Image 1 (cartoon, rainbow, N blue to C red):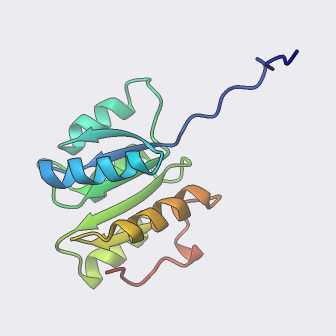
Image 2 (cartoon, rainbow, N blue to C red):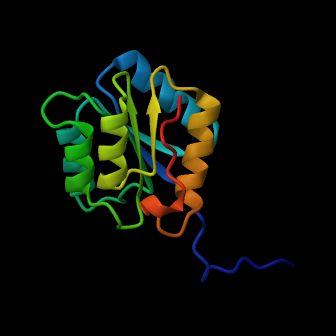
Image 3 (cartoon, rainbow, N blue to C red):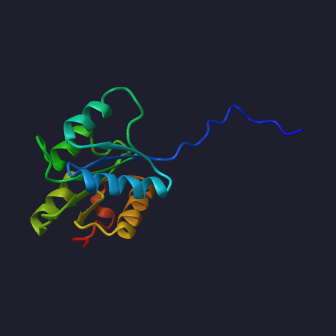
Length: 147
């Protein structure tokens, strides 16, 4: 007879916040990440994501965040959510420039990806952000710009 060791908590899939104001983009990214085994919470703006993050519910393991959002931009959302707390942050933007890429790196984003986002590249960057010990350490090979 097999017994179940109830002292070990069951591993839960990583929780990803997808923050994107474009409904089609948000749903597509979320669907893809769910198929890849992630738990996903979707938000159309940074304020909603911040409310959820500070609500006492499980916080995200990873945040995929658009830069141009209603209200706060993606960098502001990340700063308030708290870089360096074991949460990986990936910025996505249709307006990715060298200056924005540098600002994202300085702010603590693991990666910055230009829209339209390659889903294969997004998955690779998600896994890298989840696998690194200090996800927001810019010295860990933050790319100059991922396209």
